Length: 619
Image 1: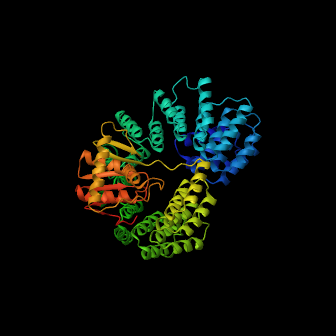
Image 2: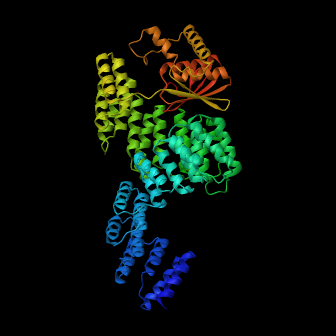
Image 3: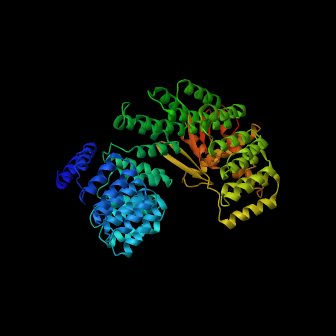
């Protein structure tokens, strides 16, 4: 056996995916006293990476390189650097990189890619600066890795500079799907969708990663219609082997926009083209479909699909438990938990969040307390912050504010801003000013820019008639540049999702009829003895103006539009919590017009029928 035959045989085994045979052959060469050379070391690195051996074996290879006096070789040194980076041994990679006497674009790209892939994006950009200082020009691989780091850091300025370099250096003179996709991904994650779309439109070749980046970009930007339009374009290119992330995004959009029609179309598309019951990804995809039906406000389709699924995991059960909780069907959520445990499916931490939330929305304090205690006792699940917040909400919603505060004081960790905000929200609902101010102070100590804290506190002061305190709170918000989120509601009609903002007059020719219809509803409610709840309207308005202002609430605009379009089941979504007056109006309309209405706000689903709501006025 010679060194040449050793190297040739190692490469042959590795190229054919036989690392075990390569290892056996190498160990045999060691018995014969054969000494590795600079061509053996890269093969050994590849061998141990394929075997996914421990860093200790990597250090042994490093030792071989030292004994063979080839550490200073550019190829060997770069290979060892890459090995240490893949093992996560960054200090060793640093030291070894600095020992390479003459570094090139490959050695620098190895460091940049290694840091970028391991989430050390700032260090990746630092090495790029070192690379330029040494007069070494980056290649396409370098730029693609740097763009990935810019995307993670939301460093759009650096990303633009890299984009400019691609133009001036000629890297974009020829089509490069990897580099162009990296640009699309960077702009998308930095929320610069016009730039992302500009790069995307210039691509002569696209792959699934390209489509995934641009669709997800529009999704996270809130441009749901644009994301769905791109998905249709992608399907028209006959790209049937879609990534799970794309399917999950589109299904999520259908759920968030309560667009059941498009959701059902997606379900049919998946059945026809993508996955079947025997596919390994069946469960992941069908959990996404189940979640879409839940978010679309179609509990019937959700429960039907759940019953037909031949396989279920803890995620499947958790989705339906959360569904029952959000619909105010807390008892059913607890029954489903019992059935889940009876069938041997072990609940996890997320399951308990859903169950505790269900108890909270149903006012089941004793049941929630027992379930919380059972987590660690019966399942060895140590409660986390999300469970603590659920318990504070459980007590607070039921008006047990002192118990909620006591629970916070007994928490084994320091409460976060969400914990104090939850208590503050309950204090607002139950008009406990003293404890509410305390919760607000604690929340602002952790995040003074949290708009919701100021809004809840303002409502507390308004209810208590503390107008000076209210004005001071609003003044602080103005100084900090904080603005409340703009109210928005949406409803699907004939395949199109229509959006409404406060005082919306964007629908030409339809707007007057909407307000006329709302005025007739208001008069009918007044005749029936309903009194408008103006507590959520500015105190500076006259009472008549407050009543008129209530008609501009976005969910009422969406409701009137849906009534004009017809149909027995109306699905409406809203980005903010529904107010008491709108809730009363929806109950009245459901009885007067004989309609079933599903209203989804950030907290839960309200199902109105014959003058009643599934939340039992507890939300």
